[in-house]
Image (cartoon, rainbow, N blue to C red):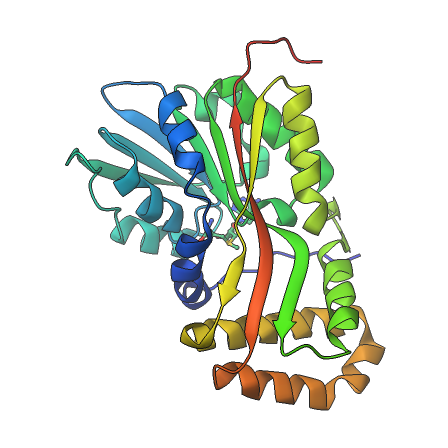
Amino acid sequence: MSVETIRVSTEWLDLREGADAAARARDLLDELCGHVPGADVRVIHDLACGTGAMGRWLAPLLPGRQHWVLHDRDAALLDVAAARCPAPAPDGSPVDVETRCTYITRLGADDLAGASLITASALLDLLTREELDVLLDVCAAAGCPLLLTLSVVGHVELAPADPLDARVAAAFDAHQRRMTDRGRLLGPDAVAAAVEELCLAGSEVLVRRSAWRLGPADAGLAAAWFRGWIGAACEQDPELAEAAGSYARGRLAAAHAGRLAVTVGHTDLLALPGDREPT
Ligand SMILES: C[S@@+](CC[C@H](N)C(=O)[O-])C[C@H]1O[C@@H](n2cnc3c(N)ncnc32)[C@H](O)[C@@H]1O
């Protein structure tokens, strides 16, 4: 068991922003646009916003005037998010942002009252089942669509393949599911848990794949991702650290040289408030 608050760096979020934008499931947008309540100003809460990449991707695709409320527990990331406001809506309507230093696991229904849309990206795997259930209940009380993107699903493919890939992947997934002082993290089980909870709450849930497909043009991201992946796997399985030395060096060199193709599975979910009573 460990007490941990792992800080996410601006550099890492910058590195992944382009690949995230390319991976997001665009075909959920038609459904989304059809269900975001029309209002003079659409109020969109982005939970665990980091530097605000979700707003920079979505605001220019969503018609109408928008006010984004960006929540994160990390004040330094919020400062960056405030300085990098999204572009205007596609019809030219203005978009503005407000930042709130928030522990999203402590949000109450009042914090999201009046929301037109709630979003979160690359967040769910970091939560425990209890935290996820409470958060989804709070979101459901807002009665608006909920867009949860880029949740890891535990699928990684490297090309060319290596016999050690599967062992590293298994150790990484176990690390994602590790026990913490808050309970066991959901890791790659988060999407299934979220779908279950949202369906029980009576929402209509649309699920799409949103994998990263990193090639030679993404060498910097592939190398940084690989370093994090192998590091977490070796922390979880110390015997692997002994076995994987030359594997890791070779993979890292290939990634830096743009010779390692990396697919990382993610899923996007759109939950639309249903007409039926929760079960
Ligand atoms: C992987 S980053 C994703 C950031 C952003 N959503 C994106 O996609 O670029 C996870 C973010 O969640 C934030 N975070 C994690 N747990 C949190 C919590 N309990 N309350 C608020 N923010 C949290 C971190 O500070 C970090 O900014």
